[in-house]
Amino acid sequence: MELDAYRKMAATEDGHWWFCGRRSIGEAVIRGLGLPKDASILEIGAGTGGNIAMLEKFGEVLAVEMSDLARRIAWEKTGREFLYGYLPHNIPVKPGSVDLICLFDVLEHVAEDETSLVAMRRLLKPNGKIVLTVPAHQWLWSTHDVDLHHHRRYSRALLKERIERAGYRIDRLTYTNAALFPVAALARLADRLRSAGSASGLGQPPAAVNAAMKALFSAESLIVPNASLPFGVSLLAVFGRDEAAQDDRLAA
Image (cartoon, rainbow, N blue to C red; front, side, top):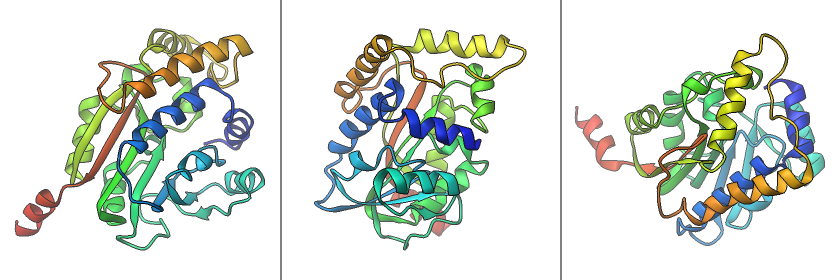
């Protein structure tokens, strides 16, 4: 991402409706995984540290981020040292040592997404899980995606294919941010029609609007851990290693 995007993230991620809603949903999903006590948790693409406090509720967190600026801001915010690293082949973590890997809107920034998924599989313990979110619907591609250096937006079918081809079994694959889908879709389409300028929606809206949108998005934390939403602005997936698929590849 652009350096200015990290500064905006640091300034808004504690209160912006989108970051708060995503954290609420992520926390609810992780709580339902039955992780071991003091689980080993790895966040890849940890940005400026907005998810660390939530993840620490479930275990010991190791954060990896490639941006020097983001790591410096994260240190100032959290007092934690983030490790330098990036997908697919530079994650400084011992193989087979992680109970949970989290990627919150990271995979779309990586050119080699399937290779990255394969690389992460080697880091997981046998019963380890991955929780990730990505932006949905390539037809929503706009200056928002360009500004944030996305390589793609995902359809449900494409994300499923990428995950399964990388040797995983999917536990849950659902859209999120369904209630605000019409508003977000109109904003992204408006961005596409603009001939110049930056993307909309990067700043925090007025307090009353922000609170209402936060409540709508966060309410999905009551649904997503147990049921799938048929549409939304983002996709969320939970998956673990498919040992049978790996055995099949070895036998071949």
